[in-house]
Image (cartoon, rainbow, N blue to C red; front, side, top):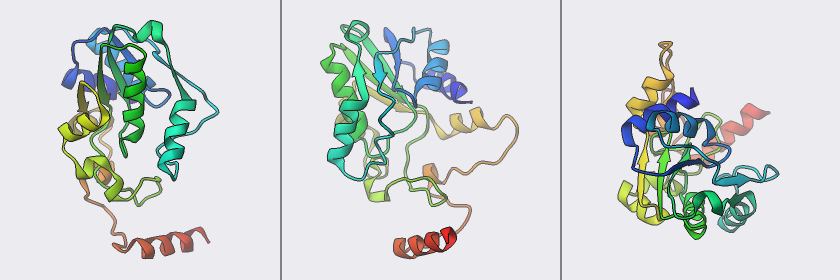
Length: 204
């Protein structure tokens, strides 16, 4: 399924480029599909230290920035002088993506085009995924161009919601898309404190 997301993403928004590089490990499968359809070769321009976890769930920005520096190492021989397509699965706050784009450009990339294999995350998930408040979600508060400028990429594109659904619904199943639409299938407390109290009762 994740590879198909990359295929659809490439059909929607493949730029002219020299190499497709996944942001490991979350972007690997989508990057494979993107490279397959776009015809741009895929190479690992970033190598991950697997002893570091997901950075977007770290509680403080300084810790997230430090984790990115420790977690990923650019491969200059792959990136230098190239037009690079970076593929990842999501942008949450945008701070991690910004750090990675800066890192890839510092390694000599001529252009960096960021492609995201899901639609913009506009709303938090209340069903078990640890996402920040809405006011911390960059796509909920900024335009596509504002996000691109903040991240520092030469271009930025997300997979469309229609493209996402076409990739995951061949079986005719029903999927929640509330984090992309703000429409929740099950009501949740609008008061965050009340929601947390409810969550604690469920855990107990």
